[in-house]
Length: 80
Image (tube, rainbow, N blue to C red; front, top):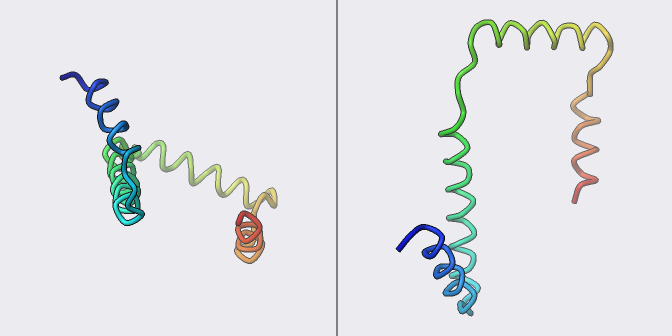
């Protein structure tokens, strides 16, 4: 069975679930897998890339393009 057929079968079985607990477990598993997957794809920066980011950050700081921590937290509170 190919991966597409397996996914379809899985989703069909998932739709049959009636247990809130089971659905929560699958949600947690999916979240954990997505986090793990994104970490696997991450590649380390080269020293040139790191220095370019540092230079950009310093330039942003000199130009006043900063967000204070308290302002950021207040903005995040608005999201929910």
